[in-house]
Image 1 (cartoon, rainbow, N blue to C red):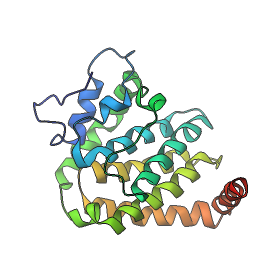
Image 2 (tube, rainbow, N blue to C red; image 1 turned 180 degrees about the vertical axis):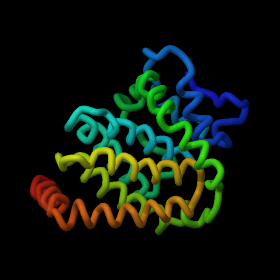
Image 3 (cartoon, helix red, strand yellow; image 1 turned 60 degrees about the horizontal axis):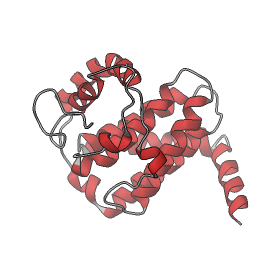
Length: 212
């Protein structure tokens, strides 16, 4: 069943805080299906898909968050690179999603920050969000960050989780300025944790070796 914002606005117009609040209403044991969470969001749909993909990064169990969230983030990035207008989901993913209990915990922690974000974030610089080259660049960064999240690099899950959350909020709030900030932080993170450590290069070499 599709969740609706508390304040009566459609999902395409609701703020991220309102969407998260609507997702939190109900039985904590319910599982929210990903295909329902993505319904009615229009151009913001990839932002919600990335938001859900980022949630596992905050699971406080070493190795689990990255192993689950990393491939999901890569899936979002690849689809942005390909220029898809609507996300594609295999059926086994479309019928699954986070339990409401996890979303409620997430809302409890982040709701005050979302209130502050609403004061400064607004739809702006739409070209950054809609231009084909910009969308491809966002997709490329998400693919690289998703690979890094999936790798067993100690003490980085929360770092990548917060960074990916910035990407998700930029897409959800249609805020090009916030997305540019996420680009800059993403490039720095890839350089520090990926290129300089050799982890990203090693992973890419291994993947290419499997392909060829």
